[in-house]
Every structure is written in C-alpha cells, then in structure tokens.
Image 1 (cartoon, one colour):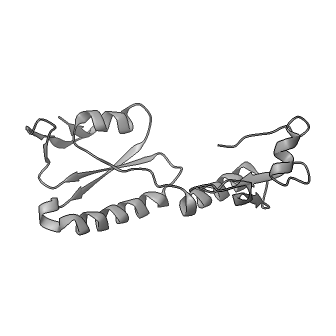
Image 2: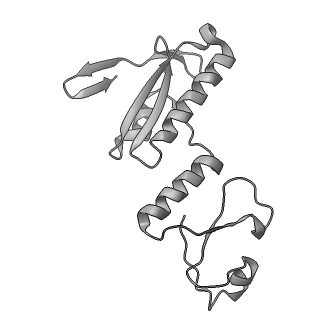
Image 3: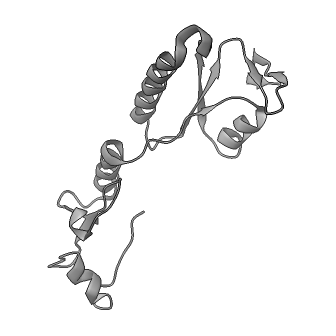
Length: 156
C-alpha cells in the first residue's frame, strides 16, 4: 500500500516517524513491528517504476510469500485465475507417499522461489499431486480430468 499523509495536518505522525522534510517516503518492511523505528527511509529514484521496483524487491526479502494452492477442485482453479487475465502455471508433484513431507517441503520451496521471479506479473501458481486424485472432506475420491486442446487446457 502506498499512502499519502498531509504532514501539516498529521504533525504527530511526522514527529513519530522522524520526518524532517517534505516528500519523505517511508518503507514499512514485512514481519512483526515493534516500533516506528522499524521503518526505512526510501532514498532512491522517484519515478513510479523505480518505487515499484524497490517495493517489490523489499517484499521479496521481508514480505510473506503468497500461498500457492493445491489444485483439488475446479472451484480452486476458478478462484485462482478465471476472473482476471492471468497465466496459470501448473506444477505436477509426486504423491506425498512417494516423496514424504520433506520432499513436499523441498518442492514447495522451489515453487515459491520460482514464483518470486514473476512477482508483480499476471502469473498464478497451482500444484497438484501425481495421479490427479484427491480425497475430499467426506473421504470420497475425486478426480480432475485435464485435457489439452486448441483452446488451451480444459479441466473437467
């Protein structure tokens, strides 16, 4: 979030955050906050591109990564990408029985690292287990049918 504060009205904020001059930009790094001393003063270029580039780099180092969902139903797919123009990247992983929790965590880290390369771009990542079957909430087994066509990928 980029916010503007009128320091002639919000003098207490100006004092709290140690703002000495006008057009001061403060960065609030991700993670737990303990005081206003946790802010960083932005002292780089002032174009939109320079500010966005810096903020994305800061989010990459201190922000929480976006959760990468498991594709377990058509509803997950629809929530992830159908309402806006995004490119969905589907990652097929071995079944957890074949790789164990440690293996799943390793793959999860790889997917998260890869997703950071396209941070801020219209990409979404989904992963699914090998075999395509999923055990639902009531214990029933479901399967998502994935087919390639001239129109793209079709899920049923």
